[in-house]
Length: 234
Image 1 (cartoon, helix red, strand yellow):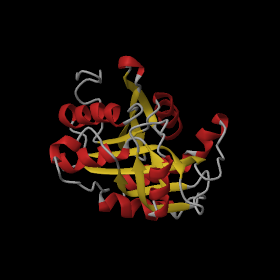
Image 2 (cartoon, rainbow, N blue to C red):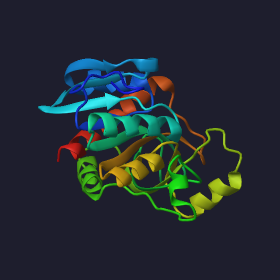
Image 3 (cartoon, one colour):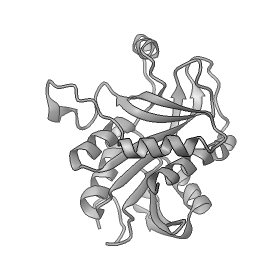
């Protein structure tokens, strides 16, 4: 048992999906997996293991922000030998051609800072997705009903950001969306030689100010979870 994950040895699968919200982890596990068991309830950060088309999968909440995700991913890797880690979450759209409910598959994740930044000192390391997962996810996305975009995203370390100038520059440079976790996930995967990817559903839009009502989010997130599972076991 690790500090923040109460699972026993063998409870965690080698493939882990990582929604930020623990209740989204519960919904995804109950919706997509068979033979589901709850493997973690520590601090209310729910985790579940089951099977999808005969493959073992864990869906573990990671919390909000890169420091929280860093805790769970570090423990999933070091204590439970997780090999494939896919973030499934929401993001804010940052381009006119990206609409609410669209799916974004993140090739790269820009950030101003993350828990791993200090390791590199003056170097601006560019964290990116695993190519095999990315390629498989793009292929899987073509079979869904959700318009899909592939490109760079921004992982912010603040939710209430007061830098409209910075957001404007990222929009100008083609960043597709903003969320709060993927850059650190990609950093950790690179360090520990694991596979990682972030697949995101656009839940609100920074330009149009459109936002999905909470009761519509789960249904809209279904394609994202299906893409993640297809990519993990391609």
